[in-house]
Image (cartoon, rainbow, N blue to C red; front, side):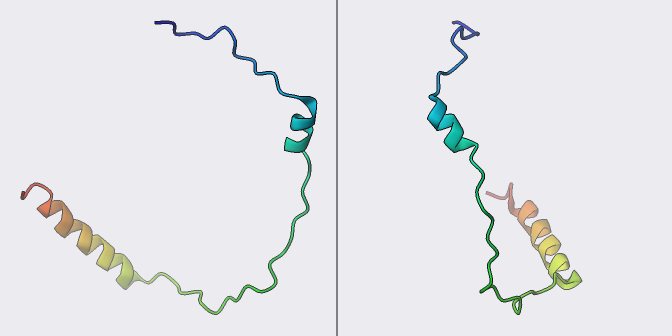
Length: 62
């Protein structure tokens, strides 16, 4: 089985390359609301760790 490919270069048309590297304009989302920014609490971290402990205990139970 061959481990190397002799034809590694791919021929791409110049117009395709130009369209790939064309600069696009950035837009800012003005309709976004930030009212639902919920912070991650230590109680949520504790609950995730508690659930991980019970799942690892049940892993080999079957």
